[in-house]
Amino acid sequence: MNHLQKYSLRIADNSWILGNRLGEYSSKGPFLEEDLAITNVGLDHIGLAEGVYKYVADLDGTKSADDFAFRRAEHEYYNIQLVEYPNEDFAYIMARQFLFDVYQFFFLEALTESKDETLAALAQKSLKEVTYHLRRSTQWMYRLGDGTEVSHIKIQAAINHLWMYKDELFFMDETDEEMIKAGVGVDLNAVQEKWNERIQEVFTKATLTLPEMPVYSLEYGKNGHHTDHMGYILLDIQYLNNKYPDAKW
Image 1 (spheres, one colour):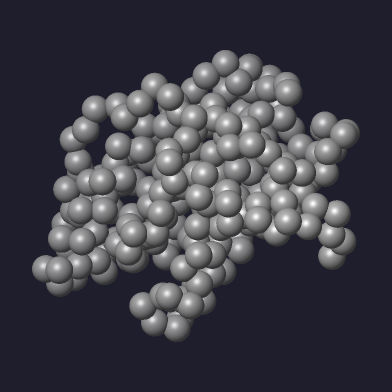
Image 2 (image 1 turned 180 degrees about the horizontal axis):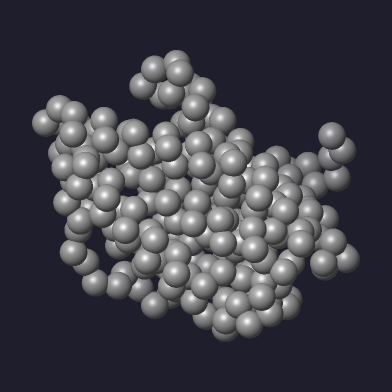
């Protein structure tokens, strides 16, 4: 697998796994409008993943988009560990979503300038959706952080727990460096600067505290190293495909 394929799979896998996580919460939202919103955000992520998987399949020439979505071993998925974290409660869902939304917004914004026309077009299309995602999750940070005593405690606790996964958002390796040199990839150092600024701005307004925590791990999901949660979500995602591998829809 070349660097472009792996770089593209990282983009797709992040949205694929997060989209499926959000799908698990369907019919469990705190009220009807939010239940529909969570489901729609999940579908947006799956839509982006589908588009990128089709591109990777074209690059590969031997596999289909479904092969990349459903027929890989756990270590062959390159999503960050944050998006595979379970839906502990609504506070965890929104904390996870906000941390990722800020990253994805600035990442896709930069990716629209990529020399890879396909990735740039997919980024441009998805940026409109992610702009809504970020606006929505930001509003929930305000509502939960500066709401009741209970909501403040719950969202702060979720942020404190998930904070250890945020470093991987900006971890760059040889694949990232090669894509940046080729004018295809995004400099995550620049994304991190914007991410830090937006997080601080929102947390201040939401009366939330920035956690202090060292780098979580040197073994990252974007290189195939996952938490124990990943296997369980793949059991759900891959069940029907493994049960009926020759099924035609």
